[in-house]
Every structure is written in structure tokens, then in C-alpha cells.
Image 1 (tube, one colour):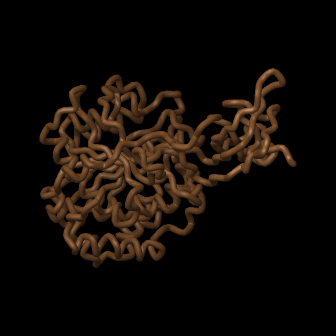
Image 2 (cartoon, rainbow, N blue to C red; image 1 turned 180 degrees about the horizontal axis):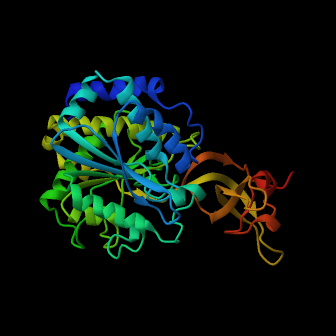
Length: 398
């Protein structure tokens, strides 16, 4: 994809990418962070007067949700992360961004953002979900389907923030399935972007067009580092979702979905991409560069597809029972980590999600050739969780 952002902005993005290890918060060693962890890591920034902290209310279980305001510029930008408790990648990136500001107060990026923008940051909107590492709130509601009825306290906090500040721009920060792919390319989508629709016809209002310009800017930055691994989220209008409605309420909003990367189970490389892309996009908004972006760049991004598995064993032979003939098949397997409520430890679980011709699928972690080996039919069960350590037992020994 052609890059049109100014060379100075490209240079800043590359500089941030190269500098990242010097300002990332090294104490973050897992993506499973809690509200208490976040507050602990934010405390030094508060002591340095980096931001103005303003408690906005509490979650369903009483955890404080606070607004962190940075800068004094005329353009207000709202960033909210982890409205789904198991989607922490951008939360980690926000903490890294705060650390960049403290370590580089005289950097042109820090000064420009501080002078031109006011950042309104909600780094963890669903702390109860983060505590359990689950999508929903403690009241079992999907917070991103509560923008209209506002039954949850977390949804009310976000809506009231929008009404009070009327930000010009918004970044809606999420994680998507790490196995999503870019169109038909068989490449894993590291990041997906979206300028959400405001109606079923997906019309381009002036507010949405501005969001597309920001998304085009962000796409160009990301393609400096992950060419071919950028996708676009489905733009079907969802009337209950916050991104669609915040766009509708007048804030030019970009959805950022953090996807997957091989060998990155905690999504630390994706966290780095978030940090660099968000900081550079904020700079482009502050300088006015994003206003001149070509929306065609955004439009050309391929849509997300779901053609990925964590692990694929190709070219195997399965005889499902004594009454059937053997067939040559590929086996698609996904992994997940679950907390064992009895032991408190994390269990690593595997599930066979597909059997057959997976030639158009790609593997996030390992793509293995079974070389015609026979499968143990007693272990081949679709959608049945089993210990990940037993995956090698799926193949019968010669």
C-alpha cells in the first residue's frame, strides 16, 4: 500500500518503534492485568503530575473508574480501552504512552500533543471483567451492547463523558480474535481498523469521513511495520454498540482491534504497534496532517476474514469408525488458557475446531505436515476441549 504521510511523521513513527524498549513499562510481564495492577503502574505518573485524575464512578463491583486528562489544547480526543475485560492490549499500550510522555517531555511529539490536544483517557472501562479476564461485566452484560439502554454503571460513565466533553475524535480500543486473517491473503491480521457506520446504509457523514481520514493515517503508520497484516473490521451498523453511537453523536471515532502475531502469546508486539500507531496518529491530528489524508487508503484495506487456526496438522488419515473408509484430512486446533476454579491455576486447553480441507486456512502458531500419518479416531472430537499437552497423541505412532 502506498504511503502518503509526510516524511517527518514517518520518521517519528520509526523513531518511536526503535525507542520503544526504552520507555515501555517493563513490569508488565503478562497480558492478564488487573485494575489493581493498572492503578499501581499509574501511581508514579500521578505523583509526577503527568495527568489530572478524576474519578467518574464505580463499576458494578465497586472498582473506581477514573478519567486521566493530559494536555491543554483545544482539540479533545477521547481514548477508551478494555470495555471487554479480556481485551487488555491497548490498556498496556496506554501505560507505555504515559511513560513516553514522562521520559521524553521535550520531544516534539510530547510538546505538540500537549499544546494542541486534550487527551481524555479511560484506560480500563470494565475492571470487573479484567479481574476475571472475561468479556462481560460483573453483571454479565456485554458493555459494548449497552450504549442505548445504559443499564450498567460502566456504560453510563462512558456516555456521560461523551455528553460532558463532546470530544472531536475518539479511539475505541479493543482486541479481536488472534486467528483473524486479512482478506484471502492467508496472513494473520495483526491490527484491524474501522470507521464505524452511523446507520444501516453506511452513509458517509462528515463525522465519519473525518474518522476515515484518521484511520487512513493510522493505516499508513502501521503499514510501515506490518505490511500485509492490516485488516478492516466489518462495518455493518450495530445500533447498540458504543463505537457506532459515539460516531453518531458527533465524535469522529476509529475502532482499533488488536489481533495476533506468531510467537506473541501476551500480544506484546501488538501492544508496541498500538503504542506507536496511537502516538503518531495523535501527532498527525495535532499538526492537522490527518485532515488531508486520503480516505481511499482506508477503503482499500481488506476486510477481516476468519481463516486462521492456532495449529494445523495437514495431510493426515482418519478412519472415524469401522463402517467407513479412511479419508485424508487436515485438522484445525485452537488453544485457550482458562483459570481452574478449583486450583486457581491456569489450564491450557486445546479444541479441534475443523476437520477436512483446510488449504485456504493459515496457522497462527504451527502449520505441520502429518505426512500421511493415521489419526487416533477415539481422540478426534469436534468442539470438545482437552488438555493441550495431549495434542501429540492425536497422531498414532507408526
